[in-house]
Amino acid sequence: MIESVKILMIDDHPMIIEGYQNTLQFTKKENQELQIDIANNCDEAIRYIDRSVTAKLPYDMLFVDISLPSSSDGRMSSGEDLAEYARKVLPKAKIVILTMFNESFRIHNIIKNIDPEGFLIKSDLTSSELASAFQAVLSNPPFYSGTVNSFIRKSITSDIVIDDKNRKILYLLSQGIKTKNLASHLDISLSAVEKRKKQLKELFEIEDGQDETLLEQARRKGFI
Image 1 (tube, rainbow, N blue to C red):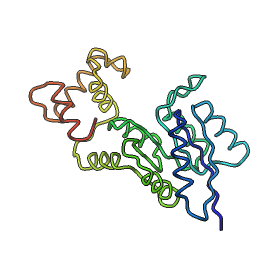
Image 2: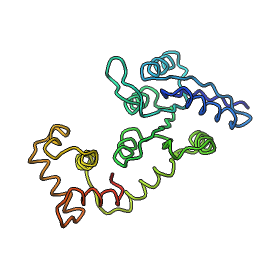
Image 3: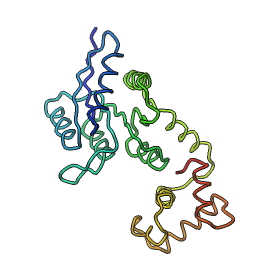
Image 4: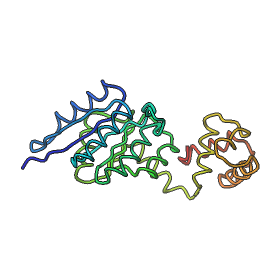
């Protein structure tokens, strides 16, 4: 019996999409028929998604690149926003995230906000991994690439629990943002930022009080 799989691939690099498409067509099972639509930006993707909902022909799977240009109305600033939208309007579709980002902060946010059935870091990706991911996501999700699994393992084995704001502080510090500028990024007061930084240094047992030492420990334990 033929199994028809309706797929939407979203990436702003046509050659990358062509590679994904060829890999899936060459490695699909004999009884699988793939209908693949391609979108190169958020606007095209929204049109395809909305059309599939209206026509009651929903997608079975979406491959979403995180680094997409913003939508023309500014409502979506990345593939992350697009994946969250797809989750709402296509609740049964399986979402596979593809990204170059391998920072723990981004990985944590994507898992928390989207909970994708597949999560692939492009630097880990080979044709055979993409083929394996596709079949696994179809029949027995989730499928996470090595970097993502390593992050999850580190987070689980670490006895340090930090909230989203503190994660963001670590991430912003690691991006070179100065403490005095953190408040505007986090929508809290500077004294609240200082208090949180003090908590983090206590949590990570930073004796010299240096931000660099804090970041070093946070990296070692998989938080950034």
